[in-house]
Length: 149
Image 1 (cartoon, rainbow, N blue to C red):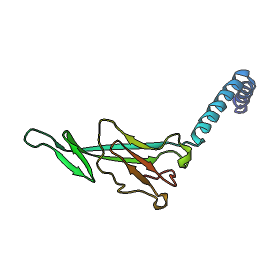
Image 2 (cartoon, rainbow, N blue to C red):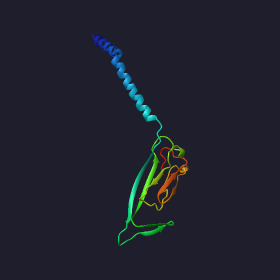
Image 3 (cartoon, rainbow, N blue to C red):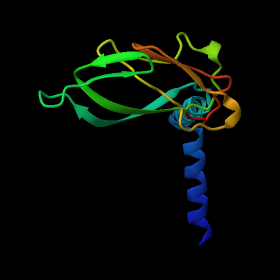
Image 4 (tube, rainbow, N blue to C red):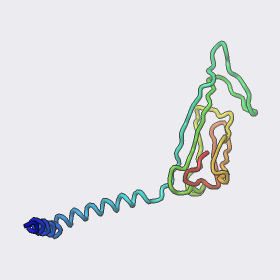
C-alpha cells in the first residue's frame, strides 16, 4: 500500500520532466546563469578615486593672501589642501598605453601650488607625477588590481 503513492509521484515527475514548459524553464535558468558568470568573470579595467578637502585659509581684508612658493606667486582667494587617492578597482592590470588620455587633475579655476605622492603600493609600480599651475599629470609603470597611490 505504501508503494502506490511513490509510483504516482514518479509518474508525475516524469510528466513534468517531459513537459516542453520544463525545457523552456530550464533553458531560461541556464541562460541566466551563463549571463551572470560571463559578466562576473570578464576582465574589467577601472580607476577609482576618492577626494578629501581641508580648508586652510580664506583671504579677508584683515588677512590678505600674497605668497610665493616654488617660484610661483599666488594672490587672493583661499588656500585648500586636497588629498586624492587613486586605485585600480578592476580585476585587470592597467598599462599606461591602455588608457586614452593620461590620468590628470585639471581645473582652470584653481592654481596648484604643490603636489606629492605620500603613499603607494606596491613599491615596484613606480608612480610619478608632473605639476603645472593648471594641472597635475600622473604616470606609472605597473598599475595592478588593488594598487593605489
